[in-house]
Length: 498
Image (cartoon, rainbow, N blue to C red; front, side, top):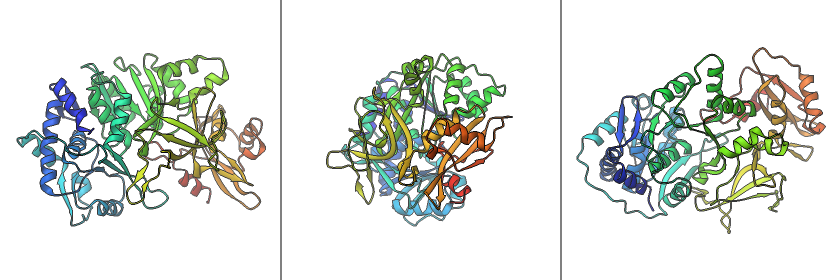
């Protein structure tokens, strides 16, 4: 199976349906297929081994994804927010490559000799103008379809490899072909270099849903586009949803009559934010998605019925599930293991391991990270309750080791977020002469709220063990997040002097 099958089925069934729209440009599914053929011919003629992209979201993104699949080369979108030096280093790693690049990103770059640049506007114009010969994809299911560089926050970025069979396993297992009505539209706000941006293109194409690309997220503009484009489906990272809720609370109109489904993921969702969103848009089905680049996107879901059941329950065990990421997908196996590899039982905290056809778990240069039985170590920590709901606690390297005791930042953050004055919180480790590491918390207070350090320490002490009480608390105007909503804990630690 090859990714082009998704486009071929959509173009054959709904050739005149709009596939993608951004700004003043749009492509139907038939036009998207023809543009992909034309682009694939250019890739093949270039003799390059990769198709790179450095630009914001546009109609060029789905063209590039499917053109690379037709041409049999990996598609490599690169983070345009990196420095010029960082982008140049990544481009060296994919040379020889054909690079689609936005004009503003091309100017500061010194490109490697084996990288052939084409401006995004010129790329699209050429693909529209060229007579497109019908193409077939001759590659194997095991060929690499997508290569994504990790953030590289703790070292040299790793190149995660996703093969056609991994991505197709995810799409065919989670999306019903042609399930979208002609009037349906999804507003895509995640950047093209993120796995969620790629899966949005693939899943929307297979569902035959119109994609509305939003190049740069802004809450008021997001609300406007939802209304103007009659958007039925959205995906947001938690910080984006929080900003939309704040915009509505500050006076913006909340009415989104066409909106039927709100999916979110990519970071921890504060409980107050999702509770407010459920009240603002009661007609919408909410879904929390948890996944990784290495797993071809989503591996666990908290679905609409589970959201409603948890939000409306008086049972603490059921209500708690609103803070979970739901249960593993049917095709995914999941285990929680201790540091020695032993499988743990319900409500026991440990390392999350997953297995399934969509799980790639592979990096260029270092090979597969799957064990002999096909299990992938996510390096996330969490627990499964008795009903199989997954509760995340953060990355394994975020764990605070105090006097030999492992402490999850997530459990302390959850307790602090229950305080009526706290809007956002990040818990990290700081150096401690006696215990090795101690707990520190960066706190963002709600507007016009006030609380003292000792009051927050007492709040934690009465609800958790004394070892969980923050030894240091800083009050901040906001916490550092990246553009996809992930908390930058390293920055928080630096602010505490570690």
